Image (cartoon, rainbow, N blue to C red; front, side, top):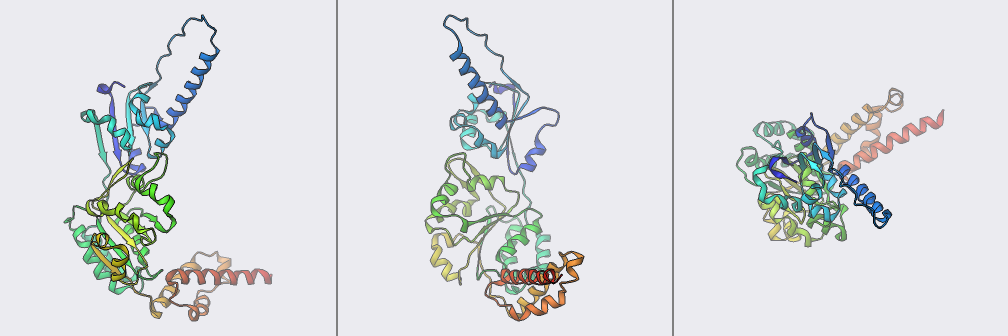
Length: 379
């Protein structure tokens, strides 16, 4: 590939913004399509060689395929072989590529362009982050959005202020602890809503030791990894749900991320500065969190915020809210059967704090199904 007269763009960020950067007046060919074409031509070439009789004249070399614009989306690097990835320039040199647009290119590809920095245009997605107006909104709305956690609001706003005021050069890292279903994950969702972006969430309880290591540290380029997912995220609010569940042996993977906002594995390097990283846990206290996580990791949290068990009053408010929302989702015919007042009244004695909000949602859902079933069986 003759670099000197080619347009080369490395874009770091989510796909929706990458697509906006692509030229609209040129035919686009994806790296996946090129890999399929290359494999097919290789098979055809092998077949011709095997079919040729001895003494046949050498075939005229085919002209190289002209590609006005070659595009690689993040997920498409898995469609090319390991050898093609490590010799990417040689791979695309088989074709006459006029311009090249790569979304979140792996380190093995980036390294091949090291001596060509002057020819590569690097574009990084600018993530929205919390500002002072966002803090004012949280101050107004939080008690109504997250029921029963009045003590959390002030500590949360205090922790968020340095980020909103532009005083941080690293991500803001928060640890939420407390019982299940009391508003920890919902708080992360709400912050993402305030920023106006889709929450980046990874449920750590889903990972077991044998599959967590390659996800954290990077395995084959065809596999999933946290670094790659962070590069593709759409939000500056990052939620690591149930952070306490994986083996403590993996905690060292987060040191640089929490300290500098950089997360690097063998294939990718993600930057998450000016972000909020929220780790939720079911620890009963900050002391337990420090003991279980260990002092080196615990010290890297900018704030450790406890969420208390929900009071009977808070559960009643949550029940009323959920009943109102659930009935609003029903059809007119179903609402003639399920009365919001009757639904809430029948469930109030059954509400307990053991399962928090999830428990309330479950009994509301079950009671509505029971009422609709009874009506259906009577017909």
